[in-house]
Amino acid sequence: MKKIILTLLLASSLVMTGQEKEEKTFTLSGSVDTYFRGNISGGTFDTAPGSSFANQPGFALGMINLIAAYEGEKVGFVADMVYGPRGADAVFGSPSGSAQIVNQLYAYWKVSESVTLTMGNFNTFLGYEVISPTANFNYSTSYLFSYGPFSHTGIKADFALSENTSLMLAVMNPTDATEFNPNGSYAFGAQLGFSGQYFNFLYDQGAYEIDFTGGFDLSETFFLGVNAAYFSGDDAPGFYGAALYPQIATSDSFKIGLRAELFQETDGEFGAIGTGVADSSVFATTLTGNYTIGSLTIIPELRLDSASEAAFVGDKSLSTFLLAAVYSF
Image 1: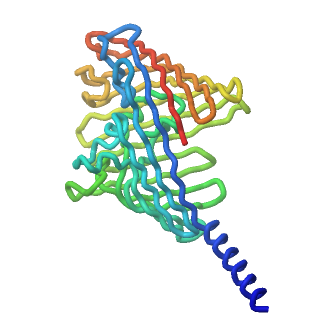
Image 2: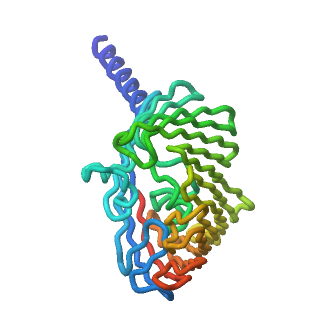
Image 3: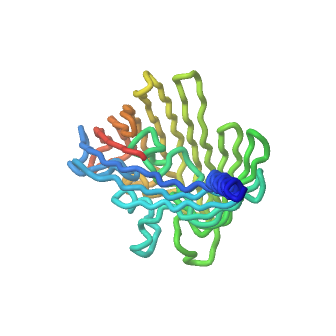
């Protein structure tokens, strides 16, 4: 009888332990990326488009991305670490060298089934593209992504209003001040989502940005992404722009897509295009392929940037070829 009782107690203990493990999940994921970029025409050998990342000539490095995440029934955290040129560019607002490997670092509490509170450093909610190359179709990035915010540090509340509708409200440090508040002012953000379409708003130190990000599955193999944004400050230069992302899946392993973007500076020289002339504009088209081999994605890319002024070392246009390799795990 004692042996039977001990066996039952051991079995129940294992069941309880198994249930606890099912409710608490720790994961480690990430990516590694590298690329080659060369100019076909325009500028000099090392001239690059005026957008972020993928801007070095020849064979170059992206970054190592390691993401440790713990998800419990009510609480959890994410520690997202980056190292390499792309990572350093992504966290440029970090004043200390040791913190320049932290891309995201936040904890969250699921207050209820419809309310989640998050506090810490998290990537921006504005825009179509993100810092990690695994989540972007194109390897090079758009002007809208490059000159919108990258990251915020603060507290946000996510509300699931219905099955298809969500609302996010946030109070944050000044944009891209990732470690602490440098001047005592705060930024305010909001996002309204409906069936995969997101309307975003950010107010920060007298400047504001309105952004729409969304996409539509036009068929089983044809997807159209959309991004549009308007940025304006108090008596300061601003910008507006729009980008379309049509993508077609030709097989299970290959997709081809185009990014067509118009970016316009307003009320002076914002400094994004690099012409030195007020109210400049640029139209950039990027033809990209995604060939997937297991966890590895090969990304060939042709890009043409055409500016209203000489933005590329004496030239108004710049055409480039890029070949990237992105491994995710």
